[in-house]
Structure formats: C-alpha cells, structure tokens
Length: 143
Image 1 (tube, rainbow, N blue to C red):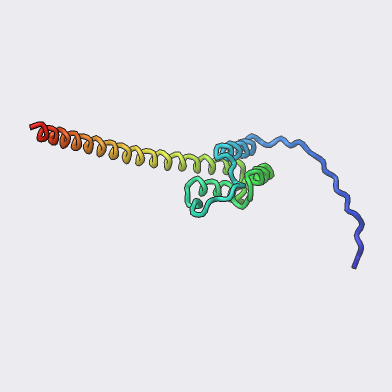
Image 2: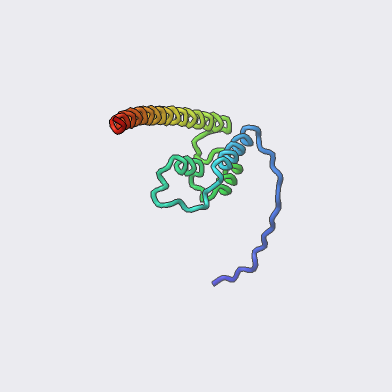
C-alpha cells in the first residue's frame, strides 16, 4: 500500500462577472425559488407530490437536491439540462416556459371563478327556496 502524504488544499475566491444573459438566467431562478419559499429541504407529505407547486419545483431543481445547489449549478453554467447552445437560447426557453405557466394559471383561475359563480348562484336559489317554504309554513301556522 502506497503512503500518500497530506494533500494541501487552498481556497481562493475569484469574483466573476456573468454576461447579462447569464446573470438574467441566474436571477430568474433565484427569484423563482424565492417566490416558492425555496422549500426544497422539507420532506413532502405522502400524496403531496402530485401538486402542481411540487411538480414545478422539481422541474426547476432538476437533479439538484436543494435550491442552493441549483443556484450554484446555474451560476456555473447557464443551461442545467444541456439542451441550449447559448445563454440567449436558455433565456428564450425560460420566457416560453413562464408564458405557458401564466396561461395555465389564467385558465385555472377562470375555471375556479366559474365554479365559484355556479356555487354562489346555487346558494342564492337554495336561499330563495327556503325563504319561500318558510313563508308558506308561517302562513299555515298562523291560520
């Protein structure tokens, strides 16, 4: 067995200025994770993995275990999925993804508003029905 002496390690911090497109990609991920409260270290409840919030978070993190790891990887390279050839392509992909998510959220909001309106209308009809029955019963009791 060969003996190896102590291996020295030196840490040297180097300030790096990202290109504008790369900085935009990093900041977009940072803001997105902050908006989701960077809740990646918390273990998800059983059955909660099917929620759209969890699915979006998993999509954003990719193979990273934590939000901090994803940010570090994003800072080191603009494309975590290795699909884009340039930072500009990654920016365009992110914009397309966010526009799709916005459209999906709008569609879900409209659907929920319609359900809410329908339930409100049903409550009004039920209240009118109960009021009429009460008025009819009151007339019979007083007569």
